[in-house]
Length: 199
Image 1 (spheres, helix red, strand yellow):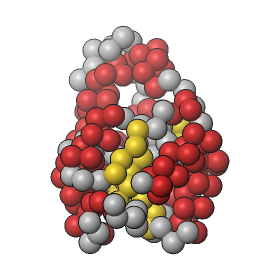
Image 2 (cartoon, helix red, strand yellow):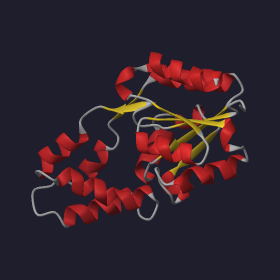
Image 3 (tube, one colour):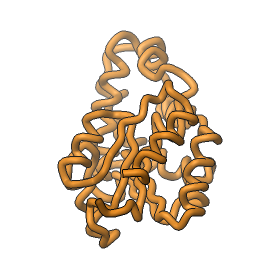
């Protein structure tokens, strides 16, 4: 089997975690069902078809109930904490000469926050953001886009994500993917990365 030359990393659930339960918080401030409305409204922004601000404004305008301001809502997408231990694994992998790439579904507001405030660009050779690619996980085209850009055979690419549906999509195009349980911690993540290189 070919050795892994490039490793794709998901962000949410692998390298960073939310400070609060988004659904619970959104339903608290807007009423039951408000969170689901916002998550659906976010989808075009994840594809780069609109900004998160515009998507939230449209959702708020159409919601029949109390709502916080769009500015207040935007801050919820910033309530994320980077797992320093997990990011150390990224750095260690990169130090071994493995091409490290971020492969994540994010809209424009989160891209700016993660690059300008959380320092993601310092840890990766390449970053693939869904809103800049025009395609989202778990669509197989998301992974084909990355493979074409890397110019590396899928069998030489690894991928770590916390959602089985995303892992399955990556495996469908030939990428060696592992599903990581966000609750398992960085020690398990390190073992999972080792497994990718042991195959």
